[in-house]
Image (cartoon, rainbow, N blue to C red; front, side, top):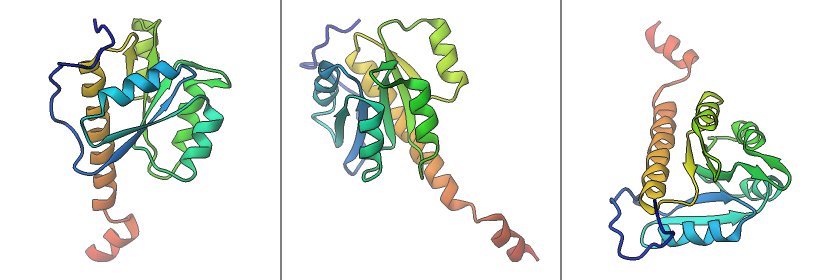
Length: 159
């Protein structure tokens, strides 16, 4: 279990080549500070907001391939966040965070389509690993979607 510090902790190099912004949705400012410290040595940037309303306003103008969301927010919860981001162009992957993480919540998170569940207090290495893998998952899906021509074009090419 992490002590919540980020110093003298070797992290695997799974950073993107270019700057990528992770959106952190949590009413707890300490969560945003911790995440910024985790990624301060990399090309990751963390933008923190306190509510779903703020997150949606930000996502109208910016893109984040990965969203971390506290289980319970002042104006909603992670399920509503998952529903809202699903309608975005190139929807981000969602990682739920919770102090009350257990097997039932983990199963629900995965079954409803979120990427993963991170337990709090955060473990520095686990946060970096899960966010990096989530970004790679999003990136692979994005690249795959653009590599496959639409059905009408494929039919025309094979006709």
